[in-house]
Image (cartoon, rainbow, N blue to C red; front, side, top):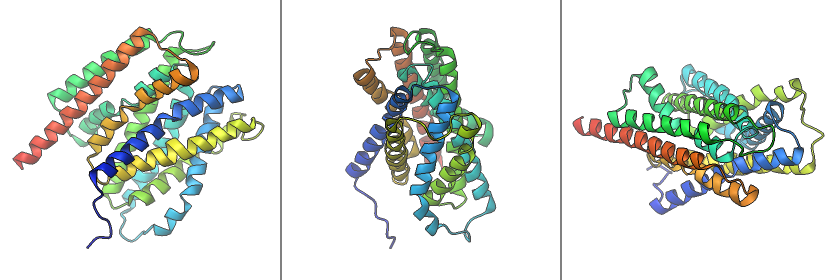
Length: 312
């Protein structure tokens, strides 16, 4: 009998809820760190990204003791390493977007990964999406256009919503590759704890030199900045990501993806409460349409997979 027992549904739901709430704090802590440091842009984003992943990697050092090489194919490690590279690209692009666009627009665009996962699965693994999924993609694209058109004047002086929206979208693309590469790594025998340890460490090693190269470094910031870095590593990274990675063991990844769609809602509520940031009407409309399109696309993928299983 396995030492792992199926947890009760209410416990899984509770863990997913905690994970989404924790992930929703990421944009808030990033914006607070930017305000505390009085800096923004790529250099500071690299500092936040590298520090976040370095702290998470250090806390995951005990996971390496459970790492077993014998049952693994070399391709599992290659996929995990590639996923780490994508994760290293995801955080700087998304965090930088928060310096140029609103929390609502940034978190909404960066959580469009179900659309891109479906598209990449079609092109990469020949997993053709259903008509409902394609319809959802089109609706989500319309929502993204509305966000881009209406997201003006929502952040501080010197903002560039078009650049910020593109960076958030680039972050979504990188996290989509990260998810697909991670799926392949685990299909080839890599356990979730070992996988996370490899990915976080790879991303941290890649990013650690860049703050020094771009001149921001790791010292000289106000103490509150380091407090926010610790909070970012503790809540959205370790609690948020770990909760969702644990839950995906027991429930469908599609349900996890749907749950993540609530991140921009939670982040926008926190953004209003803390920063009194009220996006424009088109941003609200675009976000609602985009989330509806993503949910429709994911539902279409789930419906197709259910139908295929029934025929088999």
